[in-house]
Length: 113
Length: 114
Image (cartoon, rainbow over all chains, first blue to last red; front, side, top):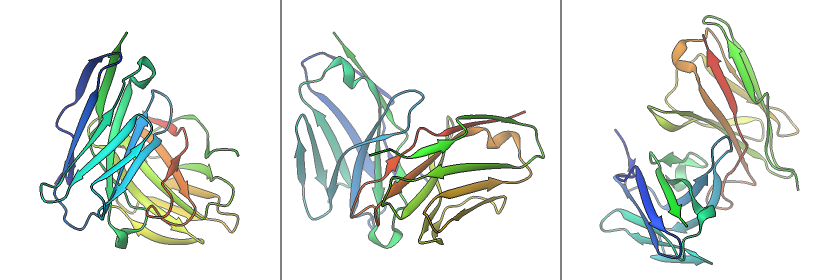
């Protein structure tokens, strides 16, 4: 039972354009969502998060949108840079579950110069 | 500030053996979580320790265990290794909980079981 899904395994985008990564979840108890970036041979690096009381959070080039009714979140990267090429994971947690994160399967992003 | 440190980086073991992995969290972080990453199952939560107590546990068999010491350092142990235990094991730390501060991951220990 996959509670967090990233339906696009890969995404290719031109440098300077927008990258949009999508994530769907099924568990209505999730109330905190995070995006992580992972390079090969390294651990995931935290990018941005959003709590369920908000529908948008921005941090520099990264914006996360949350649509609770659709149980859907997305990450926008604008403008995309070659260094953004990595695997991106969305993750969700429920307040009652402490630090237990449920991860999506990841989306591999390739930013072409 | 030093990041999360995991040792060793690479490990090769034989089926039936046991293995212990080590994790040193970021200074001041009291919560340590462990995750397993495999190509087939992705990133899966193993367990979380906070103030030396297991606070949460994932759906893994009892062969997987862990502990946390008074200095917040943590170890995880896998006994009677199986081929399917080959994976990247990631440790993550945070000050208190994911809602207060996001998890910071180490670079992992790559375990290969032959």
